[in-house]
Image 1 (spheres, rainbow, N blue to C red):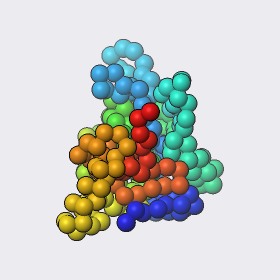
Image 2: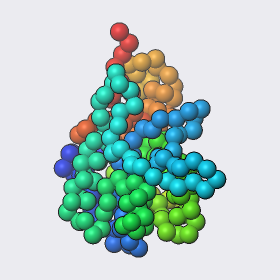
Image 3: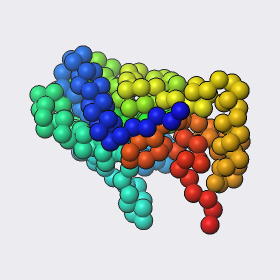
Image 4: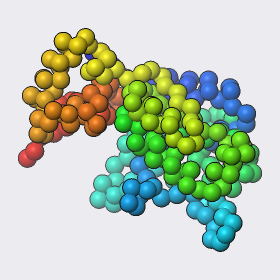
Length: 242
């Protein structure tokens, strides 16, 4: 029941969704690889810097890939997506900009803000990225004048995660290559109960009745060539305690 996604299938089909959606954009599209952002008290740092004073003006740039922890410099799926974005921007310079900062958004008249990711599980990370942009006064102004619209493009996603993202104040469209199969959707009720029990019994961490099915108890049944999302049952990707 697990959807296995090869590296070529991942990039090719995600690329197609982006190109198809761009046909409906009113202007240039800014592409941003979703990644984890720094936060304080649960509130993400602003995506762009702002001038001080009563009237704030956004400036600066945004990193495509930036690990948060110096002692853990691994780059996840955002590295693959950043590469895809760079290729699209080079191949279609009249359509795309790669991670444009406020100056380039103004100068090139970027009219669409696409957050690109591999998987929307709980929806928390994609929503946090949107919130980081929304906290910038210039971004809210562009949105209110309908100069900038938001979309989140993912290879797959759960119903709950997609719904959480769609309810963000920026009113983003969410586009998927395919919906994520889960333990609840891939099996009938009787078999789903048996699979849940199996996931709890062989959970390598602590046999928690919910967490054993992955972050948020999602039970996602999908695996990419670059890794398995933490919303999948932990027996598929977690290691036991030493």
